[in-house]
Image 1 (cartoon, rainbow, N blue to C red):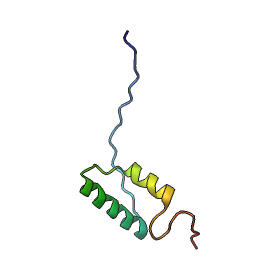
Image 2 (image 1 turned 90 degrees about the vertical axis):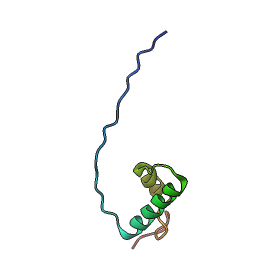
Image 3 (image 1 turned 30 degrees about the vertical axis):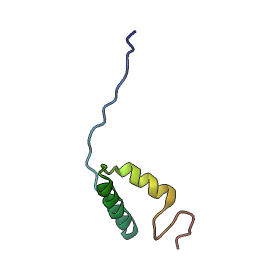
Amino acid sequence: MLMNQNVMHAMSKSVTIELGADLQLEFQCYLDCCESLEVSPRINAFLNYTHNYGTYQNPKGTECH
């Protein structure tokens, strides 16, 4: 039996984001880890991680003043 499947293809987009100093450091560490593990970096994975856990300088759950 053949099933009709709707497939949505992702289109590549170029986005430029200016990162603060703490995020820039975290992103460079993330890129270094990806290179070391020989995996492709994914911006969504990095942003999800920092959203859930914060950064080294500002862990999630601490207050910013």
